[in-house]
Length: 183
Image (cartoon, rainbow, N blue to C red; front, side, top):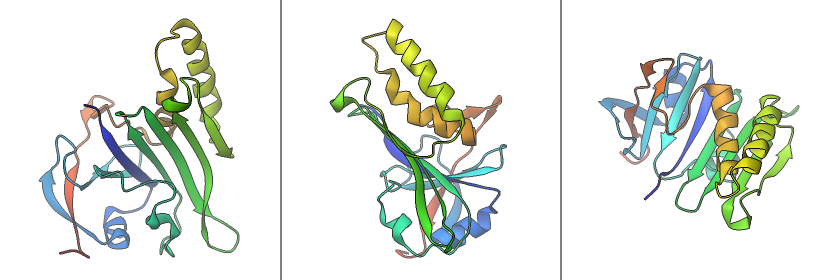
């Protein structure tokens, strides 16, 4: 059994502002195994990670179609290990103040081990990650190394990787969130 989850990250935004925007309350209860429906962690890199064990954060999810009340860039990742699919994405604001998808990078193993679909202007870090994966795929033809590309792109931006609970030698502590809209 693999992990199926998603997360979004905002940089330099106070936790309290994120919780208010997303209509969550932090319970303070540690979510060691990422089992809560939603949890939150602050990274030493200045990014705050919102975790969803239910894959709520997808590029086409309702969250990104709402008139979002903040003016911050958002990046995110969805991993479906059970089907070997991964998606990395970035949202920003256009010249009219409307949130829009700036880039997306997707790997679906069902379309082939070397499947990679990219739209928009990917972060500069992406090129080296893609090139390294292509080189590794050449030496490991039976391993799905492309699954890691979207995950690694988000990690290069935020410092967070869903399967590594430690950053710079320190544990990343997530705490459970409770929805204020369903309370």
